[in-house]
Image (cartoon, each protein chain N blue to C red):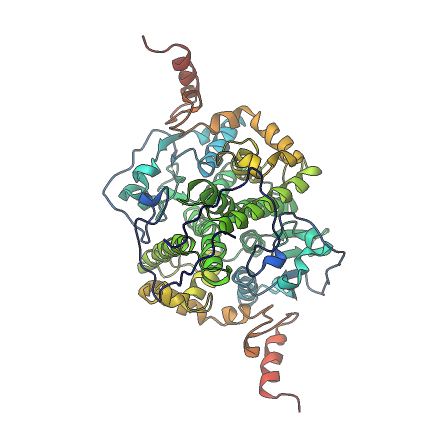
Length: 292
Length: 292
C-alpha cells in the first residue's frame, strides 16, 4: 500500500473544516437549520423537495409510475433543493427532514400535512398509499422489503464509500478505494446472480425494490456515475444486471422520473421543477424551438 | 493531513486479498455460497440465523418485546452464525440471504416458508405480522418508517465507515477517520435534537425505529462499540440521547434481546443460542451455580 501513515488519532476528535474534499462546505458535525427559509407549496396533494441524485430519482420514478398506472392522486409538485448551495439547511426543509438530506415529501391530502423523509420510507409510504408496486402477498412483500432495505444499507458503500474515495476525496487513498471497490463488486455480483433467473428483483413483479436499486446500480452499469468507474469496476461483466437495467431504462415513466429536479448536465435531461405532466413536453418544445 | 499519497488507481481494479485489515478473510468481491451446509431448524415458527452485532440485536430485541407484549406466535429459535468463520457463506444461509449478512429470518408458520433478510426488513415484517411497534395511524407510521430508514442509511457511515477506519483498518488514515467522525457526530446531534422534545423517536410510541437505532447509537453512547470512541466522539455531550438510551436499556426485553446469539465477551452476557424463554434463566443459573 502507498498510504501507510504514522497518524495517531487524538483523544478527542476536533473539527477541521478544511479537511473534507468536494462537498466539504456542506458537511458539518452538527445538525439543524442554519437560516430561516420557508418552503414553497404548490397546488397538488404531494409536495416533493428533492434533487435528481440517485436517491432523488427513486421517488420521482415511483411518482411517474403511479401516474402512468392510473393514480391521479399521485400528482405532485417537485421543488429543487440545491444541496451545494445549502438549501437543505433552511428552516422549512429541516422541519420536514431534520437530517437535512434529499428527498423529503409532504403529503397534504389529509386533514394535516404528513412529512416523510428518507427515500426508502417515501417509497413504502407512497406504495402503501396507492396500493401499487409493493405486493400484499406475504412472501412477495417480504422479498420486496428485503431487497428494498438491501439497497438502503448497500447504497452508502457505493455512494458514501466508493464514489467518495474514487471520485471526490482530495487525494486517492488506495486502501479506501480498494475496500469499497471490492464491496461494490460484491454487491454487483449479488444483483447479477439474483437477476440471472428473475426478471425483476422480486420475480415477475416490478416493485419499489427495483425503483430503489436502479438509479444507483443501473446508473453505475450505464456509466452515468463516478466518471470512469464503469471501466474500473468492469461493470460490463454483469450481464443479467445490464439486461435488467436496460429493460427498466426503456420505461417511459422512468425516463420522465430520472430527469425531474435535475439542474446540471445536458439541458435535454433537465427538468428543474415539475408541477404538471405537460412540463415534460414543454421542456422538449423549448429545446426544439429555442427563444428567438 | 498525514495521508497525502501519490497513488493513481489503475484502469481496472484488481483484487488484492491481503489488503483488507481485520475481517479481510471474510470480505470478497464476489457473492454466493463457498460450501454446502444446511441450516438447522428448530420447533418454533420463526427461525432466526444471526449474531449479536448491533444489526442482530435489533431483531432479537423486537422478538423479546413481542413475546413480552403477549404474542406467543413470536416464539423463535435463534441460531448462531459465526461470521468470522464464514458460516454466512454456507449454501443454506445463502439460500435465505443471497447477500451473506446477518440477520436472516425464516417464517415457517404458513403453508410455505418465507425468507426475510436485512434487519430493517425483518423489523417491518414482524411488526406487521403481529400488529405491534409500527403504528397504523398514517402520520405516525410515516414517522416510524422515516426514522427506521434513517438508521438503515446512516448506520453504514457509523459501522462500515467510522468503526472500520477508527478501530479495524490496518493503518490509521486521518482523512477517513475525520470524514466519518464528523458524520457520526452529525448523526448523534440529529438524534439528540429529536429526543430533546420526544420521549421516543416517533413521540410517545416506542417503535421499531427505536429498536433499530438503539443497538448502534445507544451502544456508542454506552461505550460498548469501537474501543474508546465514546471519548473520541464526546458522546457524553448528547444528553437527550443518553436519557433515551438509558430508558430503553432498562427494559427487560431489551436486556434479553441484546445477549441472544452473543458468543464472545463476558459469559454473563452470552446466550449463544435461544430456543426457549427459560434459556435466559438457565444461563443465569449456570453462572450462579457453576458445575462442580
